[in-house]
Amino acid sequence: MTVMPDHWIRRMARECGMIEPFVDRQERAGVVSYGLSSYGYDARLADEFRIFTNVESAVVDPKAFTPKSFVEKKTDVCIIPPNSFALARTVEYFRIPRDVIVICLGKSTYARCGIIVNVTPLEPEWEGHVTLEISNTTPLPARVYANEGICQFLFLKGDSPPETSYADRGGKYMRQTGVTLPRL
Image (cartoon, rainbow, N blue to C red):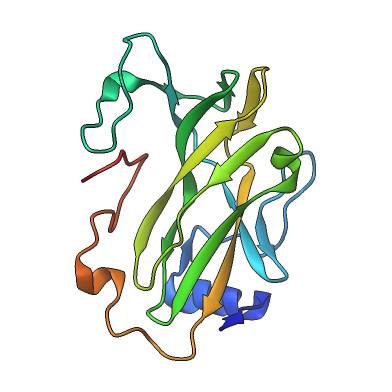
């Protein structure tokens, strides 16, 4: 497996629509950086958030998820409560090639503030907006900023395509748009 460089990411974004919209360089003036980097792509946080709350005393259950577990906000700055969690999504829409798997890592600017981003791998031939899980591990409220960088995606090209891709399996999160809640 090989980590793919900037020129490959650029070509795939332009020729195959792998990332839309695509920012061809690192934007960093006054913002948490985003765009193309040496061996990855720093995605932006959209302005849609679902912040977990205990107002309704709901239980978080992946087999019986209820929207009572969170409040929805559309905002440029989201405040995540102490020791809490929010779902959000990327601005970018991804289309992953059949012979590629994508790993996501949080940005160090946020990690150094106790804000952790988790995303499961983007599997071969998956496509959609990426739903992001953002944890505030601190005892203080934490801010995250829409339309700025939130995480970096690394593209790993396999030696050969898999026998079965995410699309072939009819994956349950295929072509998701917006913040997508857990599905069974």
